[in-house]
Length: 290
Image 1 (cartoon, rainbow, N blue to C red):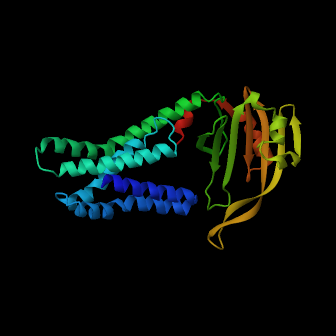
Image 2: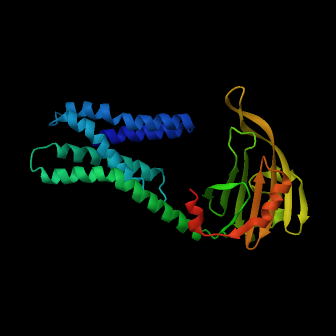
């Protein structure tokens, strides 16, 4: 039973990956959460398990308990890890549940059921602590100088470690308010490029970026303005739509860091003013943002 359900879960997961869009991912998650119940009941009855109805109802919960343990990212998990984790969790979940409803001493079964119930509370808490610890370790070992800006009126809302850089997102206002503004700061080691070179090619794999003119403000400060298109909320149609926008970017050195400050809403003077607000920070402070 568990093996068959594990195979079905993997097929759903693989099918969703073949159509990589958000709607497919949501349908796949819903299917993976719902399918084990009717399939477990059907296979339990076909196998003539003792109390097969209870096994079919409770086995998916046991499976989800095992999956929740696998969701704790002690190390980076790739697709092969998830396929194996889902398969093993489904098999183990149905085996343990079938054993719970067999005849025999009730004492070990009570302890096993209690352990699975406890996992629904303990595992998420432990997972959050482990994920936080892992993110702190990654930031400390990234080689990226840990600095942050203190921008009046803005709040640091998101921190992303993307390999050789750390991206900080600051927000002001609400999306429904015309006064909404977002400033993104990309922090890299100063040895990665000069401000002039970074201004010319923020994304080295895009050859067209070198054609966008950069202006020198001072020895270590360069700026660029780029006309582009972004998705914005259209109040008339109550949907997101592509619209023309202007992206302003500032490139500068701050200590041993190369920073790129950019925004679609803030003006160039506001972005230049951010340069004087940088201060050293710690990995613990950055992770605590979220």
